[in-house]
Length: 238
Image 1: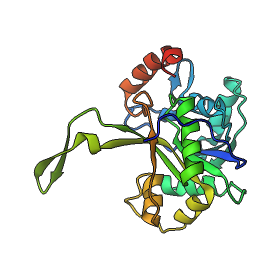
Image 2: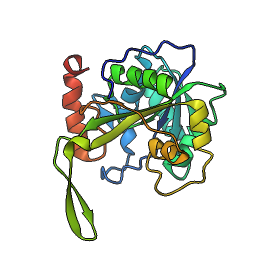
Image 3: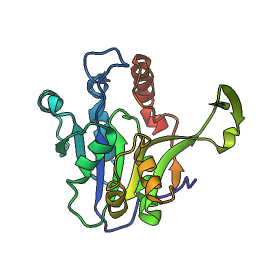
Image 4: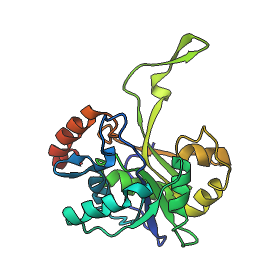
C-alpha cells in the first residue's frame, strides 16, 4: 500500500459524507455514540474537525437520523461549533444513508470520502493520502495489516489464514463521484457492509491506502477511555 502520498493536487472538488447512524445499543447508552463526550465535546465534532483541518478541506455532508437533527443543532449551539456542513436525513441502512448524502453532491465529478462518524482520531495525513489515491486510481480504502493471527470458521471447522495477507478495513473510503454514483445505483444487497463492497460489486478494483491502528471506531464503552488516552497523545501520534 502507498504510505508516502501527499495531499492531492487536483481541481476536483472534495467532499466527505460522514455517516452517523449509530443508536448506542452496544455502548449501553441512551445517547447514540456519535454524541458521547470525548475530551469535553461530542465524538462527532472531533471527527468533523479532523476533515476540516486537512489540506484537502472537503465540504462536509453529515447524515443523521431525522430524530436527532434537533438534538444535533442544540449541541452545535452549546459547543459554539462553527464548522460549516450540510445536514441530511439518513436511511434504513448505511447503504441508503450514503445514497442520501451522495444526492447532495451536484458536481459532475468530485472526490468523495465516506467516513464513520465514530472514528474521531483519523489523522489528517491519512485523509489527504486517501483523496490523493482516489484521484489517481478512482478508489482508496484505508486499511491496516492485522496484528493478530487469523482463523476462519467454515462448516464448524477453523482454518488458519495468512496474517500477512489480511487487512482490517477502516474509513475513510474515498472514490471519484462518478464511480460512486454508478455503484450506488445497484439494488441494495445485505452483503454491502461498506462502500468498498458496493463499489467492488459494481466491478471496480479497490485500492488500499495506509491506515493507522489509532484510527479506532468508538463501539464499546471502553473505546471512549482508549480514545481519551490517544487524544491526549495526539501531537505525538498525528
